[in-house]
Length: 120
Ligand SMILES: [Zn+2]
Image 1 (cartoon, rainbow, N blue to C red):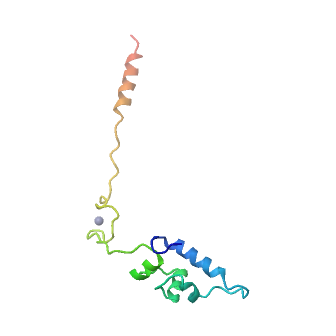
Image 2 (image 1 turned 90 degrees about the vertical axis):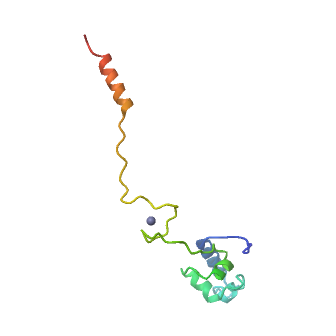
Image 3 (image 1 turned 180 degrees about the horizontal axis):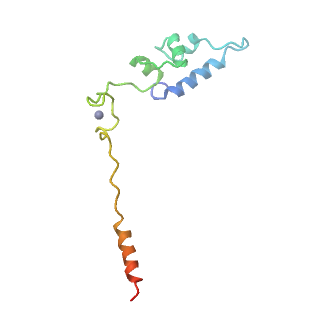
């Protein structure tokens, strides 16, 4: 796999690490040591690989790049809601449900039917 150009997801990376680890050392039946796996990820310490495999998410940009993970960039937090919105605008406050639309066409058809069926 070309680690330089690919951006992958953390769970994909964990699966790769687990596969590496499960491959083990031939004949001994032991797991592949992290130091051995780390050779495939230049710039990433063995302990970091172990931590990532155990659920830790790397935050250091150089480590993320070496693992082929997307980089983090600081994002502004909404001053009103205190969170990062994915959309450009804030969601409406206390979002009111839309007023029910009146079915004018249906009403006209019903009235037309009533009138047309009138006797006399
Ligand atoms: Zn907001």
